[in-house]
Length: 435
Image 1 (cartoon, rainbow, N blue to C red):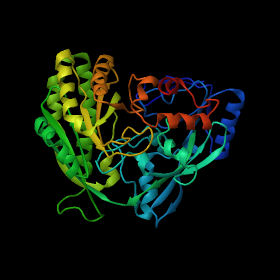
Image 2: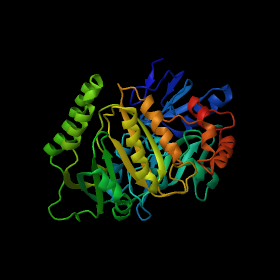
Image 3: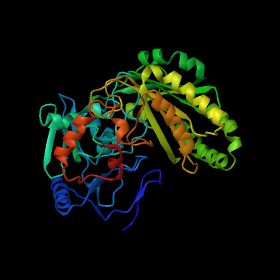
């Protein structure tokens, strides 16, 4: 049996079997058989999680055969897609109906079921993570039962299953609350980090979507501000990037050149501060407009590891200051930028934005660079501010650490006991993070 690897290439497993079902009935049969034999099953999407959440020694389900648009209610702006559908496929499926997803993250390679299961999110204080767009879902429980869940149908399951970590069942379809198709006016500018921190709260409240990147060892932030407009409603003179501009900015500079810089600085860490100053000067200074999904998502070809923590929004400036001080104190050489985003509070049980307006700080290390010292030191800072780790990104927490972070964890575990009494969906990650 061949080895499976995640996108970053550092999480690996050898399943006992790989199954590629094309119907929900097949998924049910596979799960039922595993339950009867005492085996395990784990669905996998694009492998874009940086943790071991998708690893299994049991049966691996690849759901590419269960994908596509299943139904649309144009009046209600509801679209149901199969669980294996990739996020980047959804815009074309919705376009004939004049619809779009309300918000997206900056990577769109994930499957819809994997994205919601790990709490994937974008940015914008008026918008929740992708799980908050879910109005119904269908899952196959650990007994092989097919459950349709919504606010009115199996509501207790629905309340926890939107960010289910793969612990509750195999999600075979998702109904999304969509919005009318819209454009984004993107303004990307380098600005002094201190000024961005001073205006951080105001800019999150003022703009539809605000985020920024900070290259350690510099005092500059690369800000990204996206404003929503109806189709045809972009300001005069604002247009999509030309093919050449896209190639230069997003392919040549952000991926090819950055990859080369990472390879050089990996062998010569002392060059990182100068390289970071160069990188922050070459990127992040443009204005354009386009269909929402073309602005939200960016191409990523440089492989890296990532840790991201969700923090009380008002703590972000202080946490970033502590992170900067820690890097200087430990004399770390950090080549990858730190990403800062935000999201609205929500009521999803294991959402990282559960019951609080949230700021996100994501740190990265090139796949060829040892991450442990940086990640562990950063995590100490994040935890001191009541941080919650992204379920699909590096963290070192265990089950005992999550009880105080998630008020509804007990309810989640109760539903898990009901849906998967034999732990058909269990793996080492779930055994570590859930009671």
